[in-house]
Length: 298
Image (cartoon, rainbow, N blue to C red; front, side, top):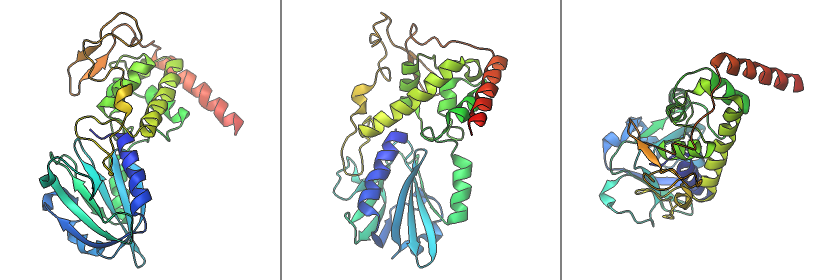
């Protein structure tokens, strides 16, 4: 379940409380939880944590030992969490990796993942470069308006599927894709390159607003998610459409929220989510005018 907001909250907590700490020891409960680099795990003993960042739904910790840097990438998957030792989990047996730390605010970082869809990777710099290039597209919080216009204008894929394609836009999953499209008033099956230019701009703005608001509220605690310190995210209270099948639309249009079954369930209002269309050719012409204007301002 953890998506971009939940991963960002975790990265910020880790950055605040473990940067500067040194790895005293480690414990690997399951060797198959390390997707890549298990043979290098001894290198991390006595290495210092110097940074924590988020890429998509994953969290990357940077370690320095001597003049060399290496990295630990934690894919959270559907049920993965990075938690501190004091945080209680329902089933402790699903803790598969532990870093024991000295000289930090926290004595441990634990990787907990009952369904094991996520994995850890221990990488050097070239390995990290290959990993990020292969797995992550644009970040929805840093992609520019022009890049977003170009991206949508270049494909006829359904919008919800496109928003969730991690190699295109990294970090949005099923929960936030549904919430973003509902607030934008766009049907999940709308073809990206048939969307009116003004609606593309509206979608871009709302995508960023929803994600930033969710981060500010600690993410959405759905199923087993909580932050490394055990706190639950409060954005679930702001969900307007996700998992609300049969409930009245919050816009007061009189319709009931529907669910369409597919690879991932879509929740939508049949009245409010009617995206305006524009032909791909017209959208591309609008994009060219926008880019030309932007370049003239440089």
